[in-house]
Length: 127
Image (cartoon, rainbow, N blue to C red):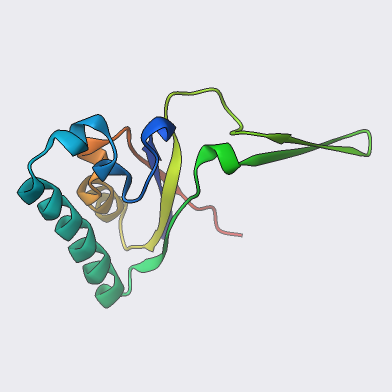
């Protein structure tokens, strides 16, 4: 089953990987920051090798977001993220795994699960 792992972060400290740009992340010793980066690199390598990774992409800053709405045939495009929130979507993984537990295990290993706003796990509906 495919899952979408949504990585949330604070747009004030935007950058990728986002956990290195937070106040908490910048306060860590260099050795700890390097360990978190290695954790992410190792996870991506493992998921690529196992065939479970479909795609992993960072997103641009929320300030570059556009929202498009059509009402009565008229398109309106506005700037900015679609919600007013402290945290915004920073990046996504799409994984194809055998069980929901495996998807949770992967989400827990993304550094933002511990050093960010969290990782949202959503099953992808089959057509």
